[in-house]
Length: 387
Image 1 (spheres, rainbow, N blue to C red):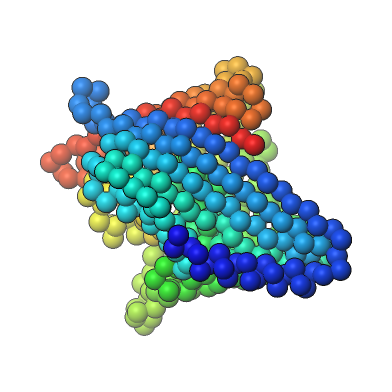
Image 2 (cartoon, one colour):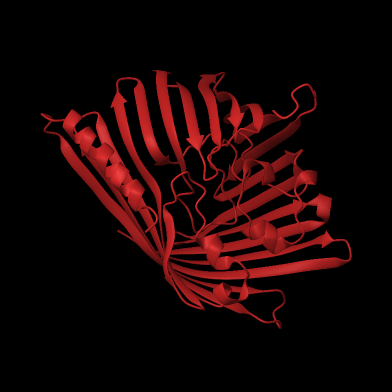
């Protein structure tokens, strides 16, 4: 596996932490994960050619506590994928094998014309806690987002709303140092390096004021842009509100006073058992993102700059518990810049606390080419068992 060098480094760091914690008698561990099977059907029209993919998805989460202050975590994602996608979608196998971290910890172990076995280490870090300080080194999730769908403040590892099967979301190879001045505030400094050896470094401060969680952030993105931003989350009466604002300025010609703005605003409301959610995104990068098809947007690697292909993007979601064991929701997106839209119905049925079934739909339509209106549909059937 490509990650063998990293695993060796991780073991060395872990052994060093063990030496530092010698004499401690509080050792413990946690082990968990899940196994999922998901069937995926992709088509443009019901009477067109259907492409079918099946995936067996296993995740293993392991955390070891070495005394009162030190711990290590490693989480591995294994996927056996077989069906039409690998053979029919150009570059699909390579996309599955993509790792955006400095250390390549993703590999297609074996593959054939229509199947592959992939393994990815997406969490692997050593963590030290002492009083109000926390230090974490390795591949980890860094989440600076406040809104639900689009996160202009999340410059380290953004995620796609459409990738619902990846609940843990991607990690970043980073060093993160946190200090908690109080129970409601935190100061953070983070430095990350990606697969192209580019540095992203930024600082973050979150505090509570007027009943709202408020954050400010700023730093250096991929050695290309200076970025500054702010965000908030809280409630106004019974309505939950959150928002993010970021400003990007290229370092190539700093004398040029022009920059690019991104902003998102989200609201949610619960009426009896019916939940409502709405969000809007403004992206100044939209006109610079040369998206030519729905499939390109769906499968491309996501960054904070290509969260959307439309200057304005709108989202709405309605959810309702039909039965104590059955939840239904309907999500909708509209992209006025290219006359595109998305509709996503979702049914989730819980047979037991650790076993569930989901039926999920995704429908896209839009005019990326002024002469052609594209359509793309997905139907997913998923079974999940957690342990």
